[in-house]
Amino acid sequence: MKQIVKRCLSLFLMQCALCAVPCLAQRPFEGVFHCQELDINAELNLYEKDIKVPDALDELCYGFLRGNINGVWAALKVIEMDERKAVVRMASDMGFEAQTIELTAGENGVLTVKLVKDNNMKAVKERKYVKLPKTFELLPLKPLP
Image (cartoon, rainbow, N blue to C red):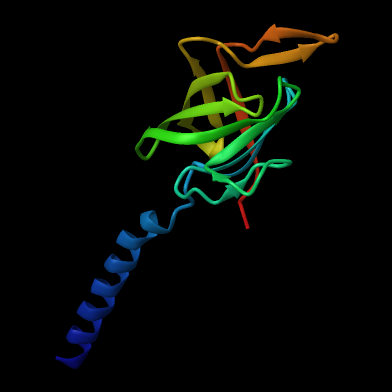
């Protein structure tokens, strides 16, 4: 009888552990990312406003994009977010341009970025500004500390 109770208890605990594993999965919209093709870096944490924009005042945001683009773009507002998709409003460090982006989490932590509506983000190519492609991918480099 004791063995049956032990076996049932161990099966129950294993089921509880298996159910808890998805809860421990890494949050897809948090970490440091890079787009090799466009030379863009991103530091994101869409779950908490705890990232300081480089060379900015002490104001915290949800993350930023920088690199071979026109300025540093800070994520100021998370419009909507679920397990696999987030819509974020970003503003340039110049202060007069804004862009809504849609992030979709894919396999192996890759984020697909889609520029929504107007395309205000520009890439620097041969010392000239050119429009970024409507979609591009950010590959994960490392989780945030």
